[in-house]
Length: 161
Image (cartoon, rainbow, N blue to C red; front, top):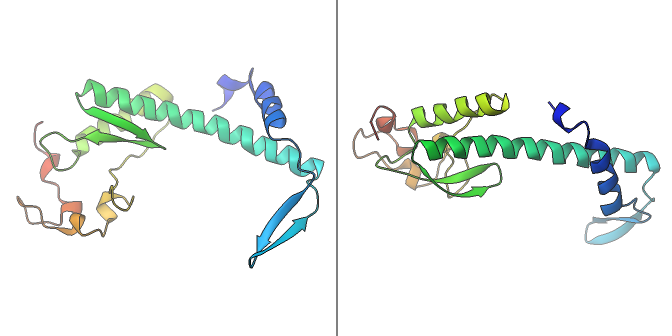
């Protein structure tokens, strides 16, 4: 997965070591009290640097997936408002929810562009849960077309845009 970075990993590790040097002092807070811990060992430092490098590389892969999703949404004439961590805000069209076929098209495009099979879902803007699992009041209102709870309604899945 990280083969494309093989020429840059050592430079990334050196940069992390410079930006986040070994910690001669460490502190932990327990029950409102500050307690000193032993200095970070060389082994612990090396492990921390490797975890940071892995995290940086993984975040870049995540960004590539998000970019592929946004590209697909744009070609489907959806307006993407902004990126939020590992997702984005998508302005709805006529539908009350993002149709499943749009989500499936984005999943397919991510796999084609990056090689990753990424499951996507719509999240509630109030609580951050998957919309299908959301218990917020708005998501529990009945759909005006089918009567099913909004979060689980499938009315928009078969409609044309």
